[in-house]
Image (cartoon, rainbow, N blue to C red; front, top):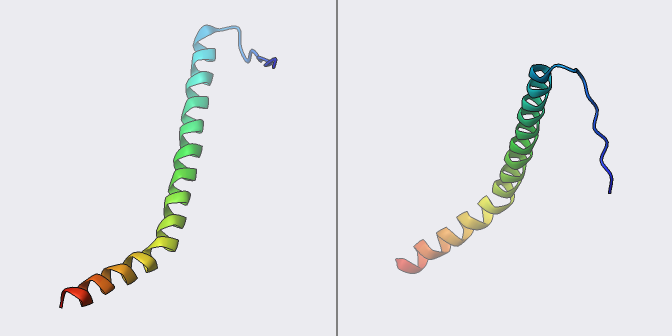
Length: 61
């Protein structure tokens, strides 16, 4: 697989800034996706956890 590279600027400082910006954007996307997955799991799992927890409490009585 061949990847294309685009040079936005001939200046090394600008290229480094572009790379840093891209890394920050990737982190934001990954963090957002992780948060959405965690929220969805909590929404699905919380009722089951609460149900199992209440069953254990009743058994202990």
